[in-house]
Length: 329
Ligand SMILES: Cc1cc2nc3c(=O)[nH]c(=O)nc-3n(C[C@H](O)[C@H](O)[C@H](O)COP(=O)(O)OP(=O)(O)OC[C@H]3O[C@@H](n4cnc5c(N)ncnc54)[C@H](O)[C@@H]3O)c2cc1C
Image (cartoon, rainbow, N blue to C red; front, side, top):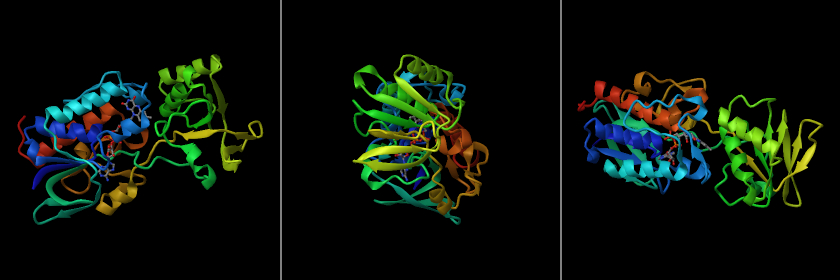
């Protein structure tokens, strides 16, 4: 019987392990289950290698309330910091293990956690699986012939010497454009956004977009809505709703539309929802006693950040100590 089982080894799951250890839970009573072969899969897959990982992502005030914290860093520094947190706290992470079912046993007040490899028991469960397991996709069809030319991240393969359309209006879209428009990559980059202005980007990313446009490295397609995609000679052609944009061919299309809460998974476990968001109480506890949602899953409509993930783990741990486990304070 574990004291705490944590599902997902991203910033939220790792900091949950660190917080639990810091509050006196022995590392052999903490287990982290991660579905991919390495921790922080979202960061590794979605961040470009040259990205600055910003502490105030999405305008969050960069104030840390728990053990873990972040200042503006490189992708490599951020991953090393998380590596070290696992190592220094002797956290036990089982990789390549996907959780597909969780049951609460009312009589023992504990949980049974089912993975593709094993069944575990724990007094507390924290779910930290993030929202990017399935990135948001457009609602029009992507023809089969061009599926390999339509991407949802920029690390799947190296993008060079290509005419690329980025679709989106948030920080990720801006960062993708900055990465793709670097001179040595020799790409011809376009950004399609449905609104007139970028209201969801932080100031730095907004200014970077403006600078790229001024330098002639980026073409902005503002107030553009995509009606459909088609394949012409194996290349994607984008049909815009607006006459001024018409139909345009590209070598590649990259969508930066964010992700969404894995509603089916959480509802199947029995977690209550209010519209698209899970109902959460103090310390991000769900309607199921002893089950917590942290990180991006607890951030609501605005979406989360790394510091949000760290702080949510600290809040959850405080609640766990108050109501469930005997902790050292
Ligand atoms: C392009 C991009 C740029 C960003 N830039 C910044 C930035 O500069 N600064 C910043 O603070 N934030 C940034 N963010 C946001 C930040 O990455 C997230 O807020 C943060 O990663 C959320 O942490 P998390 O632990 O909640 O989820 P995640 O990081 O998504 O981690 C979830 C983990 O759970 C695992 N998992 C999923 N399902 C299961 C399952 N069923 N069983 C077991 N394991 C599972 C996943 O493999 C993954 O490792 C950015 C996001 C994107 C997409």
